[in-house]
Amino acid sequence: GAGVSQSPSNKVTEKGKDVELRCDPISGHTALYWYRQSLGQGLEFLIYFQGNSAPDKSGLPSDRFSAERTGGSVSTLTIQRTQQEDSAVYLCASSYPLYNEQFFGPGTRLTVL
Amino acid sequence: GDSVTQMEGPVTLSEEAFLTINCTYTATGYPSLFWYVQYPGEGLQLLLKATKADDKGSNKGFEATYRKETTSFHLEKGSVQVSDSAVYFCALSDQTGANNLFFGTGTRLTVIP
Picture 1 (cartoon, chains in turn purple, brown):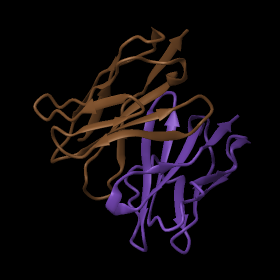
Picture 2 (picture 1 turned 30 degrees about the horizontal axis):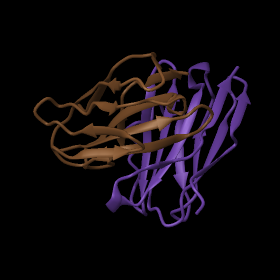
Picture 3 (picture 1 turned 45 degrees about the vertical axis):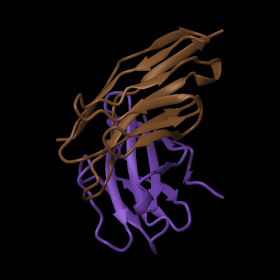
């Protein structure tokens, strides 16, 4: 079956611009996660959605970062007024909560010039 | 807070050599433990997992045993192959709240023929 998909695969933007990153989780997976993989910080958790519950935003690094999940499926991560330190690979993962395993998408590589 | 400490790389081995990548963790409660692998140009994939003390996870010839007394989850393989060249991440989830993953910094393994 289809895995987690993310788009775009690569995004180059100028400092100060807004960007939107998209994640399509595996069908039927109610939990969705965003992580960031960067050279300085390794892999870090950003935000978590579970069904229709309020998201856990405890990992978001600043108020420039936000995310939505519409209809319990597709999610969009938005970064406003991008900074060079936002350059990283943004990974999305989904899981069926009872089984604990998170399945990861291929990531979006964001470069802020 | 929860954290994972992983052996730093890079690690270079000859084909058929024995592999150990050390991983220790700090967590409250009873976490689940994971090894993820990232092959060149690919996304993160779950390699193996263990959900309680003394469990052994295994896959593709790799093994790791959940050791509560030493808070460790070392990855081993008896005979590595060139195709095992990848970055390996140790991770835990604390089974509470968001159940997000806490990752180690990753260990790059290169296997030479």
